[in-house]
Each structure stands twice: as C-alpha cells, then as structure tokens.
Image (tube, rainbow, N blue to C red; front, side, top):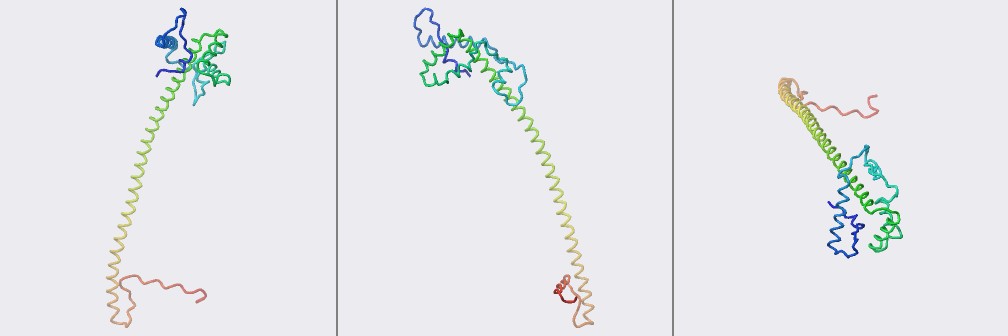
Amino acid sequence: MAKKWYSFFVTVDRETGAAASPAEGQASAAQTVADIAASVAAEPQFTTPIAGRASFEEIYRAAEIQEPAHGYTILKVASMLQSEHLRGLPGEVRRSSILVALDAAAVKLAEVIEDAVKRDRALDTYERLLEKNLEELEGRKMEENRRVEAEMEKLVAEYRARIQANSDEIAREKERFYGWRLQKQQEEMKIAEAVSYFVSENPITAGGAAAAPPPAPKGEGT
C-alpha cells in the first residue's frame, strides 16, 4: 500500500519559471517519490536480534538507520510540524516553513524523504517478523492444544470406564444381596413354620431383618 505522509513535502522543480499544471505537478511528485523509494532497500536486514516487543528506536537501530550529521530526520521534521509555532498554521505555511528551515541548514528534502522511507520499511519488515512469529506461535499452541485435548479425552474415557466398572460391581453385589435375601426369607419361613407348632408367639422374623432396639436413655442401666 502506498504511503501518503511524504506527499506533504514533495515539490516540483520549476527551473524554467513556468507554472506547472496540477496534473504535471502530481506526476512529477509521484516520480520523485518513486525514485527515492527505489533507492532504498525494499526489505532492510536487521543486523542485531530484537527481543520481545522492541521500541521504535531499537527497530531503527537494528535496521542500521543512521541519524545524519545535520540531524534532520523525518522524526525531527514531524516534531517541528507539531510544535506550538507551526501546529495551528495552514498546511502550505507549515510546508514552506519546513522547506525554509531545510534550506537554511543545507539539507536536501530528498534526504529527509529517504530517511522516512527507510524507517517506514524497517517498521513494515518488523511487523512482518512479528506476524510470522505470531503465526508460528499459534501453530505450535494449536498443535499442543490438540495433543492436550486428545490426552484429556483419553483420561475422560479411562475415568468413565472406571465409573462404569464401579457401577457394574455395585449392580452385581446388589443382585447377589437381593438373591441371598430371598433365600433367607424362605429359610426363615421354614424355621418359623417349624417353631409355630411349639410356641404361642413365634419369635422368628420372616421377611426382613429385625429392627435394632432403640438406644437406652442416658442414666438408665448404669
């Protein structure tokens, strides 16, 4: 995507003194910017590693963007434009003021634009590195999540199997218990029938276990 911030400064050479039409001016300005951009490496190489979220200064330093001896970088120009002396003035006045300052310092506008392009491309390159690192991190973490989910599903299946085994064991024990209870009741009925011939009150319980006697009140039987 084309950058528009530098169009504020680009001027058209008028050596002949003849006024250029708006279309000619735009074409000349575009060509000037294109020539400057073509002279700058499309993707700067960072000569030093940048750890974590680097500051802009660290990014510029890693890309070996040197501050010129005259000190007029695009950052300095941006600061000048936002100063209290220029901030509220019309755009053309601000532009002219910057050009006058550059001329007084014997600084070519092309140098400032070139500095801007270098910084812009360093930031774009670093953005791509961050995006690549993010994509790689996302890929690793998504793969890790898939492994964790598989392990979790395996554990859940194992726990469900244990729960089912416990439930099955309880069911088997209940079946054995109720089967034995039925046999017990039959046995008790046989015993009760035999005892009934000899007692008026049959002491044999048939059909269920005798209820436990209630606990004695405190103080009794002591």
